[in-house]
Structure formats: C-alpha cells, structure tokens
Length: 400
Picture (cartoon, rainbow, N blue to C red):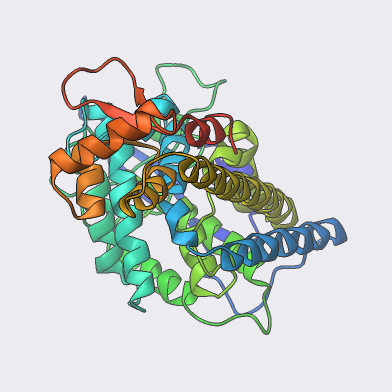
C-alpha cells in the first residue's frame, strides 16, 4: 500500500502491522483503520445533496409502484438473480444472466454457478430475517458469509467468522512483480483481532439505529457501505455482503417497503470508479465524491427496477388476457402465469410444487399453455426440461 497516499487521511489512521513472507523473511508495514461512524452527516457539496435528493425521489417512486401492485414480492426472485449475477461479476465470477435465471439453486452445475447462486440463498435468508424484525449481529452476518462461501473455492476453515488473517485488496499497477503483496496492495484493511470484531459490531448497531434526524438515509447507507468495505471484516465475500447490506439498510430504515432494488448492475458497469470512490474516502476524506457517486447509482438502479417492475406487470396482464382467449379454464393456469413471472425459467417439478398439484397435472397444464404459445420450452435439455414465458425473459435479459 502506498503509505504516502494515506499519511494525511482525515477519516482514519495508519497502524503498524508485521508478518513473515512465504520465504521466512519478516516484513513490517501499516494498515488503514477507518474512524468509527458518528451521529452527524459528513459535510457534502451542493451537487452531492442534489444527487441524494434525486435518489430519494427515485426510491420513493419505486416504492410507490411496488405498493400499487397486487403482489410486489412476486418480482423478488428475478431481482435477486439479477443482483446475484452482477454482484458476482464485480468480484470476478461471471455467469451469463440467462444461465443464472435458469439454474437450479439446489443443484448448480458447477462451482462458479454455486458461487453466484449462494448469493440468492443468502439474500433470501437476510430478507426473511428483516421481515421477522430480527436484528443483525456479528454472528448472524458471519452465518451469511459462511452460506456465501459454502461449496465454493473460496471456502476456508475460518469461513463464517470474522477473519483471523491479514488480507490485502488489489494491486498497484506501477509496483514491481517482486514486491510483497502487502506492500504492493492498493489498500490494506485493519488487522484481525478483537478490535476488528468490535468495530464490525459497532457498525452493525449503527446501521440499525435511526439517524434520520441528522443524516439522510441515503447518506447513511453510503457511509455504512464505505465503513464495511474499509473494515473488510471477512476473508472473502465482503463486496457481495456489503452491497446486500445497502438494500437491507434501506429496507430497515423504511425507505423501501419491498427489497426489489438491485444495485450491483450499475456499479458493475463502473467498477473502476466504484473502487476509486471508496478509496478516496480513505485517502483524502472525499465523502462528497463517494456520496454523489453512490446516490447516482441508487437513483439509476431504482429507475431501472421501477421500469422492470412495470414491464413485468404489463406482461403478466397480457399473458392473462391471452389465457382468457383460450379454452383453458382451470384456476391453476392463472397461478402458473404468476409463477412464470416470478420464476422466469422453471421445471415441471418446480411449477407443480408452486401450484400444490401433482407432476402429471402440472405437465399437462404446461403442455396446454405451450400449445397456446403462452409458455415455451427453454433450451435444448431433454431431461428435466425447463419452460418460460418469452415475454418475461425478454424483459429481464434486456436489462429491464
């Protein structure tokens, strides 16, 4: 890490760390320890505040749209898969979106897909806790991290706990390849130990407190996301957990009534600016630059989510209009359309479970809807064939 870059950091301190290189050579360096978040908002520029206002307006419009729909939770599954695909891509694991939408979360075909789908499981667990009013703790967040790592190449014996090892983030381009990773890194987060765990606990508590009298919820979410990434409390999965916590914090603060927001696609398209904006808070205290970037991302993500939600609701109504024009009269046909909107690519077994009916009956209904061109087979698989409503997948694959 370039220590000169952080020498005058206004929102943190450099602290000494030491260790031994693989060849046994001792090394000494410094890590960055961010200050704890306080009760006041950082000073922001007028442009940053304008961006925050735009984000609040876009989030309110998304929330109003969700509350007008009969069943906004119907769109949660597709949102989580969109987020899973993009948040994994930000961390270097790429799977095509169509494959992610089609994948069976209980039986992924490879380790890479497992890594993507683990996020869906983690997010569903976290949102379930939120709906129950369950508070987050260091322990519960560690449990989520363990689920995120489960069955992947990143799983370690210390998965599911605050990291007991020193980690580094990134590598500076100008540094010789022979330089030690700790000194070549772009950023070195705080060392492991009781202090790191205590600071994570303080942050989690801070995120669940009501700061609205002093700090706008969008600014609070930006502050918490920076702090979490700067602490980097786990050996892996910090980026994915941190972006999940953005939505959870907005949900907990009442800004969102339904977690149908996916933030990672926007950040993924601007990954260099995303990482640089976070680093600028540590190196020179540029809260305005980070909050402006973050708020713009929330606003654009909310607008995309709102459009996608409206487009899917329009498709849902259109499919039911087409259903009424057929000879299919079973009430399960309408249930199947709702299922196809909420679960874009599915098997007969999955549909049968959703409709609480036998597989033979579900297959007969699906075949009938295929004949009427409401549904279609997806892909060329013969065993455990999958089906979809093309209009639904078209909305999702074109980005909402």
